[in-house]
Image 1 (cartoon, rainbow, N blue to C red):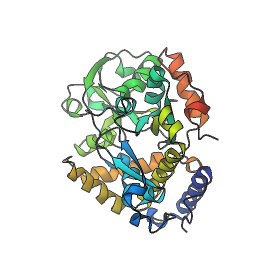
Image 2 (cartoon, rainbow, N blue to C red; image 1 turned 90 degrees about the horizontal axis):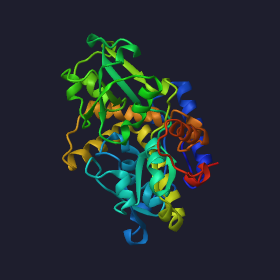
Image 3 (cartoon, rainbow, N blue to C red; image 1 turned 90 degrees about the vertical axis):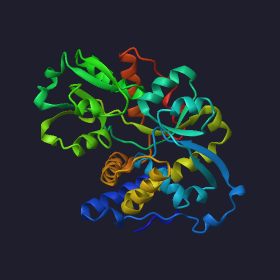
Image 4 (spheres, rainbow, N blue to C red; image 1 turned 180 degrees about the vertical axis):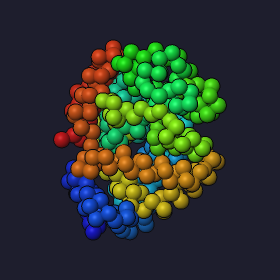
Length: 346
């Protein structure tokens, strides 16, 4: 079965994609049995000058976390929607929120809790689509260092990133009245591997797998999955500013739809996608690890498809969950309503 028309309404497309996935899972078929097809097969021949140009900034360095964007560009889905998308290099030197506000990018990717916290500053963020539908954030400790349960965390050291990505971990500690010595880490697991810290925050699709690749058995780790702790705060979403959205609403919607098309393709053509990701990483001189990127792509599939009938949708319940959580913790929070923050909602 194939998607025959990428011009169908966004919600119908998301629901249809979910029905296809459920059918596949029921039959236990390989992912590549589910195909996507652009509605303009010859769109790649369209002159670039006739396309709407926009810039997209990933929230980190190039990796499989952004596979849908890469495949939407490679397979001509953006061009099919009349877009010429320039994918910028991200990383610690290119903070996504700051670059969006300064006009150095048109669209970027942010965690939902980051977007709703930082939006208290300028009150101008617009969520175009929600890539993540399940939290991948975890806390990890070594059992042989005495971390066997939550109560063992008190008085121990915890490595947290020097960024907004630490916010949910701090909320978790406060909610559970845990007193830990916070150590700043720069997106590396070295302090944890060398026993310089007792625990560390990780993303399941990234740092957690790096710990496993370092030779540590999963059974030797004490893990806290926030998605199972009442803190299933969904993460990656596509964002632009209100001014940009008001000026180019159709182009913003097309970018969101084409990116979701790219994720559909990436999920169903994982080998091709993996090679594309690795080529991009090599081109930008980023150390590449094929097994790790394969793990990341599969885990991103899981968070993208966690709610098959709601692909790309920011639910009002998720928005309100984050807003209420931030208010309860006396953290800054967007004053926007759900309908304002996510204008394509239903």
